[in-house]
Image 1: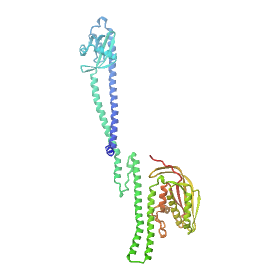
Image 2 (image 1 turned 180 degrees about the vertical axis):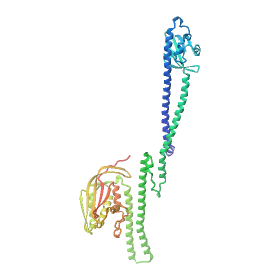
Image 3 (image 1 turned 90 degrees about the vertical axis):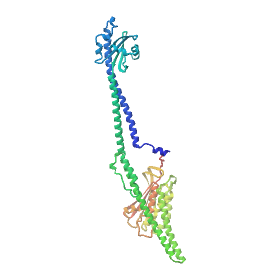
Image 4 (image 1 turned 135 degrees about the horizontal axis):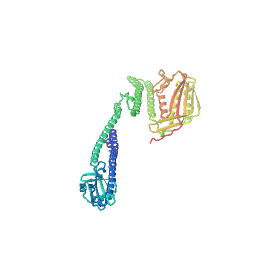
Length: 491
């Protein structure tokens, strides 16, 4: 249900257009209201000035009429009112306080009243304030004034104003609707063109396959807002291509390494089965096959260890490891092997406890010490030293986000004198899987995974390992491990 409702959601383009349309409509309503009110206020102000002027003249006219002549119709008097409206046709009706009509100008204007008391009622409602009045489908702006014992209604026809406002409102609605349509259309086109580069990224992502990992986005052709996304996509593809190439090479190397012992086993078995042999030959051949199987087993175990360490370590696997006792135990184990070539060990410095997996760290240093013994010159000294350091490390584990800022770390260095010169470029290749520097020595039964395992274990512990060559003969391996870490749940 949630999946289908998610699919029914509007696209980003339509959501943007809908939101923009709502905003434009709201702004247009406010604009329409403001313009309409401004025009109406303008006409009302003009009409109020005319009515005020007409009311002033009417008061003067009433004051000029003799008392015995006040019952004569005002429209019979000199045409002061005809000009009181400043060229407008002002209509007046004068009544007494009881609503009895005394005079009307023009004379038929009073006939439009349905109620003789209308002037009195309008006076009670508005009291010298202009108001709109509709009589016989005609529109007036009117005012009722009181003078002495008389009420006077002054009405200004505004049919022309009303008709103009109706047409103006129609045109205004049409113009605002056209503006809204143009704005929404331009915005929709802009959004569509703005999102068009996303289709390029989407198209390239759909074309990703194992045979085509070199396709990249030209960042310069992207708008500035999408350039970070394009850079991130290119960086992702670079990592993907590198990892896939590494995986392909690793697969080829595994196949090559496995093919040799398997071919040996197959050949030896076929030879032994080709004809009957005595028991001693079978025993000797079984010993050879056992050695080959051990080599094959060691290779498989090393590859499994690499896969394990590359996945990272859980917090439950990390404990404080005493590197002092660990190094002492490893030196005691390798001393007998080293004595055969006159090689001795020298341990110096303070070995702090580090946070890690003890079995993996033992494998790490065992690989380093065994390699140091193999490549060291005879009658030389292998120095194992430890120093404390403070380094800034920020790592992202597969399982837990670890942030280690200015964390104390322990640097353990293993230094030995080489039997043969080695350049820094050659030393850097030693971390590559299945790489063997001394390929001519058949006595060395290594698989070429020793230092790769060392590097993988160090990375799994959020540490690092490096090799430094001095004067082509001094070989130094530096292993940096954190003495403590702070873990933070990303959620």
